[in-house]
Every structure is written in structure tokens, then in C-alpha cells.
Image (cartoon, rainbow, N blue to C red; front, side):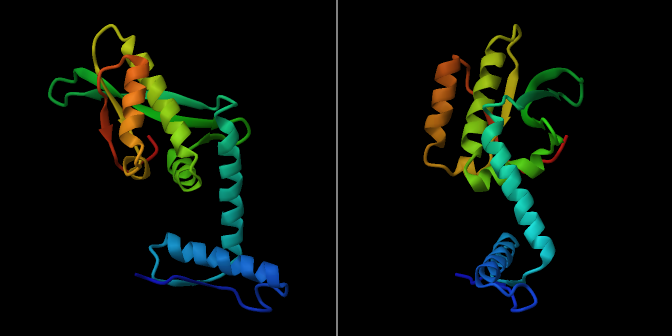
Length: 180
């Protein structure tokens, strides 16, 4: 068990009770996000970061209906021969105003907000449907987050996607995402 503490100081950080509590909560969030068991003092930059994350979270919730997500396929090849044996499906978000948003920016926010389930389902389903149409049978790798991997519904989600797309089993990997 550990304790995290967020600190906002009157009157430096705010003179209003609600704002002071909000700033302390923001500092608490930062302490927790850095591994917990720590304390953090509120800084004005924290407020800007929280607003940015909330804005991205809000935009993520509308991105699916606006068809802003696309899959790209990165070839998987044998090192010795260079022969391509499959592809890794990677989810990309192109925001209409901000442009391309890196996966290491939007995926953690989507996971925290609970938006990642629909994104991952849409991505894996689309990838499996497309792979099922490939003339030559190739391996398809679909990344899953640690949050999704530990979900009680994960196995049934994989089963549903494979059944709906009539796709052979997919290779699942859980690893940190880095822009490619």
C-alpha cells in the first residue's frame, strides 16, 4: 500500500476553495501517474497538461464516428532473407485540425478514459477482415494494451473478432507503443 499526496497552497495557487481543491487534485494525479507513493506540489504547467489531456479525451470520443482512425500495416520480414512473412497492424489517428497524433500520446489517454476498447475492437476487426482477403496467407500481428490484456472480456473479444471475420487466429503482443 502506498500514499500519494497532491498539494496546492493558499493563496499562491488560488484564493478560491474550489480552484484550490482542483489544483490539489491535479497535483495528486501527477503524483499517482509518476508511480505513486509520492507527493507533488501544484504547478501551473500541470493545469495546462490536464486541460490538454481532457481535450484529447473529448476528441477521442468523437474520432471513431468521424472515421479519423486508420490502420497502417508494417511489414514483418525474415532478417536473413528479407522475405515478408506478415504484417503488424498499427492504429493511427489523423485529427482534422491537429493532424497526425502519435500513438504514444493518444493510446494512454484512451486507456485511462476507457475509450481504447472500441478503438481496439474496431482496429482488430478491420485488420482481420482485410487479412482474410489476402491472396497469400500471411501472419497478422495486432498489438493489444496491457489494460486490454488483463480485461475479463479479452478472450471473448478475440473470439468474437475471429468468428465475425472468419479469420485464422491472430498473433497478439503486448508492448509499449512507440511512433513508427
